[in-house]
Image 1 (cartoon, rainbow, N blue to C red):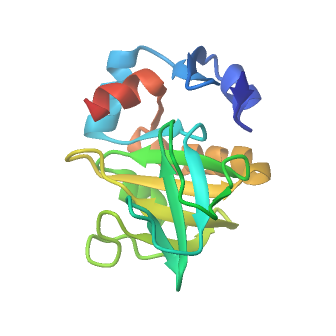
Image 2: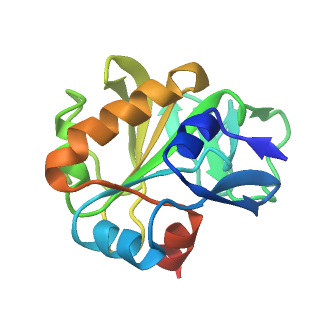
Length: 186
């Protein structure tokens, strides 16, 4: 069973774990209904490193994130069938999901990237620094809930997670697990 780079940190935060697509992921950190309410009304942070990630040199037929001229990142739930020539970079990145109406407020404390609706509309991305670490920020709303995916090199995953938690304290940020994420997606 695979584990994210944040496994031990989540364990120290008393996360309850479950198997999801061959990964051992946090199912929840507190009461799932409480986590769901926190994300819907304030802001929450989840580890979604289990998502498959592929680097491409040509535009994918399915949705992908344009990183530059002829450079794309395709990301999704298993099974993902990448195009020919794609490079699997799933183990390279820690992927976090920052979601909720106050998620933009949290990001504004950690990056100089303009994450307004005009500058970073849904399904767009930017390359920047988050908590002094190179990152990709992808706007990926969950229904009507504002959401960002933040990719950082796995060795910086814990420090970025902790920086986001610290920055989100004043906005009542809540760690959330796969149970809450699946409830948001449905």
